[in-house]
Length: 310
RNA sequence: GCCGCGGUAGCUCAGUCGGUAGAGCGCGGGACUGAAAAUCCCGGCGUCGGCGGUUCGAUUCCGCCCUGCGGCA
Image (cartoon, rainbow, N blue to C red; front, side, top):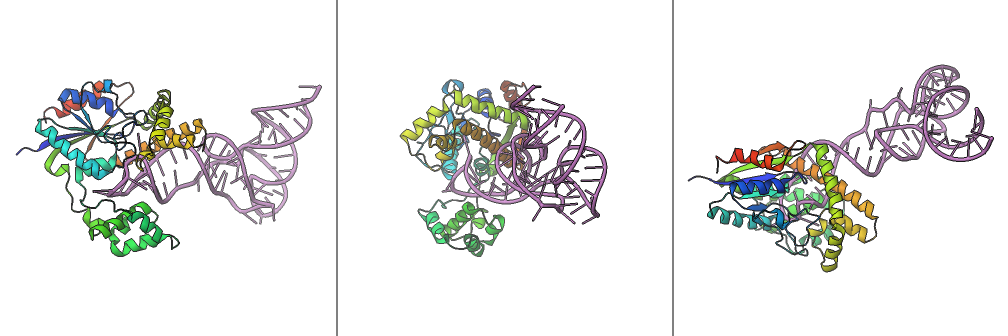
């Protein structure tokens, strides 16, 4: 049986993925699944550069506006939602187009995640409490005892991952390093094409700076005020770029100008981290957009590579 | 012309009671499997404005020069 197709369009923030994706989706007559950890939130529009209704050109976008700002979200929820969407789209004889910039999300869709190892209620607080007052590397040593492989791959100061590894161990009864070996993703059963969009670094940074200015003009501050007024943002939502900095401003920690500066800087750094992630992924075919090149052209280029495959 | 304060990392500056220097910002590289727009790690030899002098040794003291800013004429 012929393998079913899936197409990914990834890249750093502000690389124009959304624009190019709509045009490509139009050409191959399909639907888009967003691969973005923040656009899932309702009401977080300007700061996440969410696509507007009139920009979708009739293309269906999935996994945008699916949860409330006070709800938690994570990769596992994401993976489950995506898998059922892909099945549905395949049933309609279409090739799903996944678009987004979250490296981990992409990786997990491609290569899978181990199951039944969710966050254990109260575990993280409990273990942090246990570590309080003890030696700095207490948790790291503890992990080293039960899962030396995972410990070796982590820095002793990487508390977050150390705690997670311990959580998995106590929950599943096997080391996280072992659990990671038993997983399956899309790559196994599908024919996957991955395209990466980017600009020259300097140009990308200029685009980011301009986009942040634009967000302010478009009313980002009001959006954030409104949001914090109505909701207690979830652990995940409150970390969104643009939102956390403006919340700092609203709490009087610094000026509005400073908040804006921080948003630009943090977004640039984020783009760099995204690129680090994508760079090591050999399955991506890169497209560097040059000055003045339109997205219609980009989409046409991708279509040319893809049309015989679908 | 005179007086004062400066000239040190891409930027803003700290410092060396003489033994060739360090912070923040900016930037670069990397890690990453249930918080990921998060989290964590690594990365600074730079004619210490120029030329001389003193000294074993000067970016640090002295002299001259160049230059920026402010004040007085």
